[in-house]
Image (cartoon, rainbow, N blue to C red; front, side, top):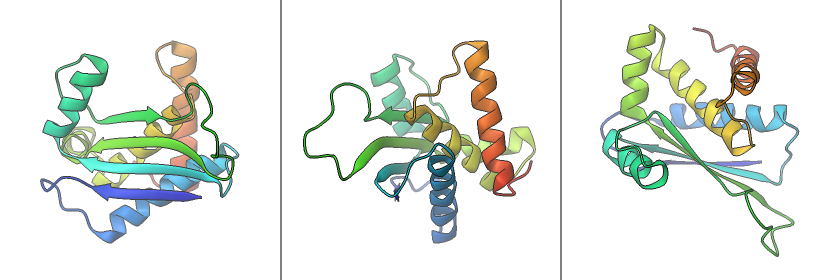
Amino acid sequence: MSVLVSNLQEKVAVDENLAEFLAGVAEAVLKSEGYGEEAEVSVVFVDDMYIQSLNSEYRGIDSPTDVLSFAMLEGEAIPGQEEELILGDVVVSLQTAQRQADEYGHSFRRETAYLTAHGVLHLLGYDHQEEEGREEMRLKEEGILASLNIVR
């Protein structure tokens, strides 16, 4: 299992511990959903301006958001990818994560862990547009965070 972490922003300090911590969260989600060593996910840290441009381009919403997921499992299989299963990219705005952590009264690490788990679940096909899906997704997110002892 491979989780690639990239930092494309300079607004919020990122150290190696945070990158490793969030890679571990992504791995926990993948394991909980039955994915093995062949699975690959990318987690990308950006600022509000960057995520706003992505949100505008891909969702038609011209404002920043906390996390976006870009799944690679949609559509036809790519020949030659039998050995590697590239699931997609999770893009997290660290500026928004910091604001939300302050607003919700928990740590920045907890907020980024939640957003990472949320984004990876989206890559795996989970959605929260309907109430049933929202409840299922929330239970999975909280269960994964609890299993890693990440509390509010």
